[in-house]
Amino acid sequence: MTKVKGSIGAREKVALARCRLLQKDPFFGHLLNFFRAGDPRGHGVKTAAVWIDGEGRPVLAYSPKFIDGLTVEETVVILRHELEHIYRLHPLRARAWGKEAFRNHGPLNWAMDAVVHGHHDRPLLEGLSASKKLMDMSVFLPPEIHSRTTVEQLVGMMPRMTAREFLEKVFKLKELKVVRDEKGRWILVGRRGNEELASPQPSESKKPGHGLPVWVTDDLELALDRLGDHEVWGDSPDEVQLRGLLGKMLRESAENAPGNVPGDLSEILRELSVPTVDWKRALRSVTGRQLGGARRTYSRRNRRYNKFGIKGQSHHARDRLLVLVDVSGSISSKNLEDFFAEIESISSGFAVELVTFDAQVQPVSGEYVRTYRRGDWRIINLRGGGGTSFINAFGWVDDHRLWARCNVVLTDGYAPWPTGYDGLELIWCLAKGKRGIRPPFGDVVRIGGENR
Image (cartoon, rainbow, N blue to C red; front, side, top):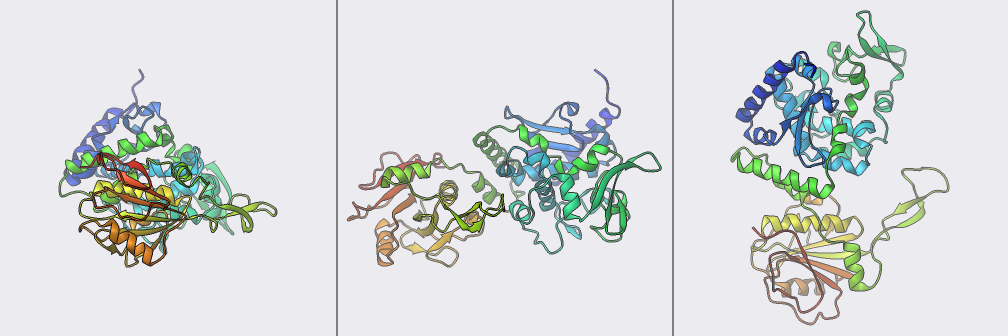
């Protein structure tokens, strides 16, 4: 086997950086311990990357040449950067844009890096601002964008395009080409108006964002592929297995780093909860009708094919669904994760009206009836923790005439059953582990894992 020049030094540097990260940030240090270094030449990684391969194995790969050009502290920042992608579930969330998203979707790859780094004048990634080299290599959120903006929101601001198109359109560049400079290096050159810009300029510019957003200038591949360096994520297992593996890694890292757990970890774990019910099939079995969906209409433009004569899609025709959620004291945080995983799944095809209850109906972020939109679990505030009364909750819905064509109750089932609702089209979603509980009316499905 041919020895890679500098590989031993790079390997030792990465090992030392692992130790430093474990000392500085135990949660991410323990998370990194799941990833075993593989043969970097076998993956084509030009900087560094962590991912879960098709067989479910966490992998760390890096370019020895790239690591050789960094200090140990800079290597710690690079490893933390890659772990932030894992923590923020970017390999999972990027799947929404299709199998080519990891390499060819320029805005997506830019957005995933930008939300990790934050703003240029106040980076979110610890240690980044201490290295001019890493600052010059990094992309940041535009000043007018809030630091808590999500990848989906950023990508929604831009059309789908390749990395080259992204450089040309977003940064308003023309005549983009790769040439050799006077030192024989490959550099990227473009034109903005009458001004010619070359790739070394970001480090020379007085204002961040000026010049070309190219991060390493002596490598032709990096010049255009920096926006597409998440290609290795495409080798991940199926979504259900990936969710399970990510959840296991994050939970165990939290257990090994008490007092050092990120504040939003519970939200991240809730997002990993896997819905277990095919709601269109379940609701059809109760009502005998096809519910949900949307209708094709000329009144809205088709976003992908914005041409005359091609229908768009309206969601105003979606069926209304009333969802009642038990937030009593017997409901665990794991139950709530499972409940909201199901609500997220329901809301993709139905107009969901959300009501929460314990002994009484409780407000959700100040509203007793909330129109639920996908992702609302991140921002809503739940109240409850008392006893459970289906009788009071059903009576309140009666009084406000909120029953829909079909209705869903997510609960553990620990309460007296209401009476007089035999004709109500309703599905009880009972947390698994509550065996022997059988409501006197409605259909029953069991969701989630065993209670903790």
